[in-house]
Every structure is written in structure tokens, then in C-alpha cells.
Length: 404
Image (tube, rainbow, N blue to C red; front, top):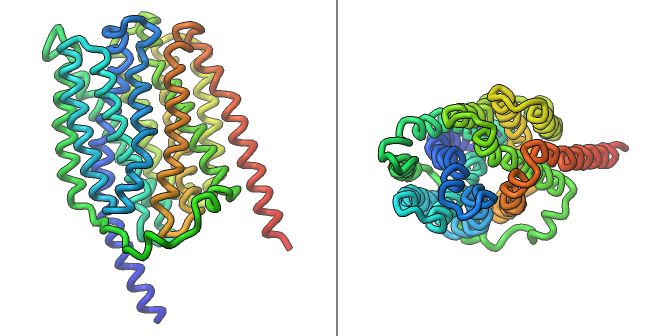
């Protein structure tokens, strides 16, 4: 019996590794979608918007799409399987590129915001790649599977900004219009890659099993995981969203901005090659706390100067901090639910993260326009302190519960 169980686990891990390869490739391609939007959104927004304080609204609409798409992604995955949700997401990504190009050609700010909202729906589906990688994996492989898929974003960090750099002037004077056409083509390639993912429809019996959602989310471990995700991702997004426009306001070039975003994305996903091993060795809470502290360090770099090097340093340290914080928080979430509960719990967690991210993102433009780049960085410190405090309290509670 033990040999049969070991053989079954080995077979599952082989399937998981095959899925991880496809999901990591899809992560790289899907990441190009967000890279194009973050590299161009506030600049195109400043060109098309009736007021400069609305310049970051297109990126905020992307984040709103992230929040709006999380629960439907969970519902689709639960009813029809993850692969159907993946295909629907890439279809949204294709329409993002086509509609974004049309908006730039017509000079329509509203249409461009609709395009970035669709991009957010695509991004919401892509957030489930990391959880899909862990489906059926052994306990030891789960954090590594999550980490490996996130590592695919390294290539997004190269592909996305370079795609913008190579194509932004092709349809001059319509800056970035052709970039969105190419982004639509990349989404179609991602669709082809994801069509081969082995993600069967959940068994009918599993749809009616498991604990109520409210019971699961009341666990202190889930509360800590969700809160740290809510802090790590929105704090990073607040600074990253504002950075390209802040660099432009400081007289830096578009090439400087593209370079900063490119290395920020590489820093976001590069550590994923070893984050899973760090979690396995030191535990998710310590990795999350390190990530939050690094985000605070990024804000300190941002407050120390306004040169290109200061902006680049902020974005790179911020990216590393986000990786530790977000991947670690995702690993914590995996510890709080049973297999049959995964879709509803993971979707609810992402809804909390991206819902809060949307609230912060809509305020980033006014924060930057009215109070400057320094205020954007100062906002990072209070939530980081809160997250670390909650992690410490939950860890103390677990230790006391485990002690005789």
C-alpha cells in the first residue's frame, strides 16, 4: 500500500512538473500584457486625459479589472476547470491589445480605460497560474511549484518593456499604438500554450464538499496570509504605478522609464528561482516579513533622491520585496485549505488583495499630482509595520498552541 501511494504521488508530481513548464511560459507571455500597460498607461493617460491628475486612471482600471476578475475566475475554474478560465483570460488579453490600439488612434481616454480594464481581467486569470501549479502536488513540492511559475515573470520583465521600446514609434505620431497590437498577438500565443495544460474539471462530488468559506477565512493563519498579500501587492503597485509619471515629471526620458520598469519586473520574478526553497527552509512567515521590510527599504531609496539611479534602485528593491512578500503569502494560503476548497479560498484571497489594490491605485494619481513622489513613498511604511506585527502575533499564537 505504501509503495502504491508513493507511486501515485510520483505520477502526480510528474504531471505537476509538466503543468509548471506550460504555466511558467504562460506567466512570461501574460506578464508582457501587464508590462505594456504599466510602462505606457500613465504616459498615454497623461496625453489623453482631460486633467493630469487622471493620468494614472488607466492603470487603476487595470487594477479594478484584476479585482473584478478574481471571483469569476474561481467560479469558472470550479464549474468547468481551470483551463476554460485560462482560455477566457487570454481572449480578454487579445481584446485588450486591439482596443488599446484603437483608443490611441482615436484619442479616446474612455476607450483606453476600457482596454486596460480588460487587461486587468486577463491579469486576474493569470494570478491563478501560481495556484494551479500546486494542484495535486505533494506538500514538499507545492511552494516550489508556485515559485517556479512565478519565475516565468523574469522573461516578462525582458519581453514586455523591450516590446514597448521596439514598437512605440512604429505608427508615429500615435505613440504606443503598435505596441498594443503586438501585445494582442502575444496573448494569442499564450492561449495556445495554456490549451495544453492538464487541468481537468473538478469532480461533481467535490463541488459540494469542504468547509464553509467563512469558517476557513476566520483562521488566524489565513488572516495573516491575506493581510500580508493585501499589503505586499498594493504597496508595490502604488509605487510602481506612480514611478513612470514621476520620472517624466522629473525630466527623465521614456527610455529611463522603460529601463526602470524592465528591471523592476525582472526583480519581481527573478527571486522566484529560489523563493520556494527559502520558504521550505525558513518558513513562509519569515520570507513574507523579509519581503515587507524590503518594500520599506525601497521607499527609503525613493525618498533619498530624484535621479534615474534612485528611481531604478527603488523599483528593483521594491520588486524583490514584492516577490518575497507575495509568493510567501501565497504559500501561506495553501496551508489553510483542503484540496476541494481551493478554488473558492484562492479566489477570495485574490479578491481581497486586488480589491484593496484597486482602492489604492485610484488614489495614486492624485497623491502624486497633489503631494509629490515623496508622499507616495511615505505611504508604504504604516501598512508594512502592520503586516509584520500581525505575522509576529500569529506566529506566537501557533507556538503557544503547539507547546505542552
